[in-house]
Length: 326
Image (cartoon, rainbow, N blue to C red; front, side, top):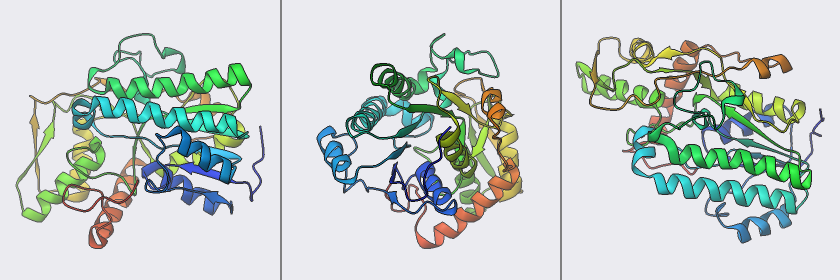
């Protein structure tokens, strides 16, 4: 266990994205005063020389590595090379620079998609690399697995205090609402809001609706990240989630009831469901003393209100609106 000084130099890699912006918010609320960030036009995290120069100039003491190229089933399926290359390079450059320039501690954030498609539910950390991955996001999963092993390898060879956490499906403010690249929950919010705006009678949902998923509000994840930075120092990765799941049909019905209760659900069964079920075993994290606090319905309501406000200012990341930097 460590105590991070309030004036410590803390670098949040990926500060403008869904997770990074939440981490920045929580660090600010917690009283940390020396936060380091770099926009994409200032620093290409795929460029080792550029990252080394930035680390040498800024000398971060703690690093939250939450940057990456992310997306839903369609984006993963159609851009596998981009997902594999971008994420491997981002993880590699930041971890290596953290070692070179003496970072005290680094937290690397992966994804629950690292686990086998047919993993035993709920998924415990020791199921990593015990079976084939879900084909629709294999490239992204491989990159995230590489990140875990990279942190473990630097810990083993150099004694670096680099830890890894694997969150479940996330949602919240600053999410991506582009229907061509978003994850399921923001996509549903966007679809129902679009239907409401056009007075459509039905909303199409991909798949059969039977697949089951777990959802964590990004503010809960950010709180967990700060907690882990001070309370977790083990070699193995740790799951972060709620430990509860529900079907895509149930999720769609919940979003419909919040956004546009008049809509009918129509399921396109020609589209993939993805992994049949994915819920994390979070007993390891709970045993350390952390648990989430944001109820799913409350979280969706607040996210929808953020979406509506962001639409007015053009800050929504979506197909018809200019993308915010991330």
